Length: 203
Image (cartoon, one colour):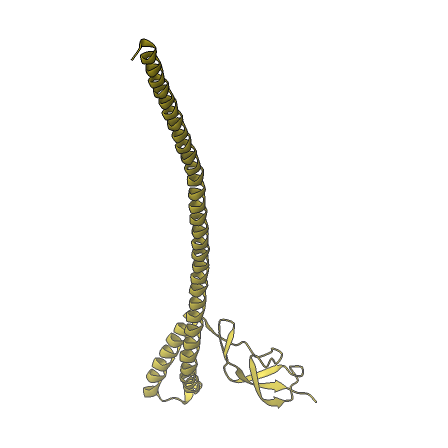
């Protein structure tokens, strides 16, 4: 083989090697570009996924907060309602108990209406005992808010008075209470029992 042929062969080999190096370098650059593009796309998608997750969490938290507020309001209403019901039941029971005691008060008052000069000496001590118990009982009722209905001289009011008789009167105008036959009582502003009364009627 001549020197010329050897030189041509070497040039061919060098050319092929150079082309291969260039081709490999180009391929490597292309692969790097693809990887960079893929990484950039992934980086863009990752924030979107995070934003969606954060939005879902915020929506869930808002719903839970609304449920909590509703539960608080419902519980507050329940407490108010049960407290009102307990108070109402307590008032009803109180009125029933006190109403059942009123006939006992009536009996004490009848016993104490007997004139003292008609009572034997050995009975007066019993009358004094009755009066003491009667006053103590009235004191207990007063502490509970019980008061007698002031009736005599007042215009007849069906909310507080029960008229059982109409009588002529020079002292009072028509439909004015002239006498109480049985005491009436209030518990606060509620009528426990109306007063049984006579009412003036001058025809």
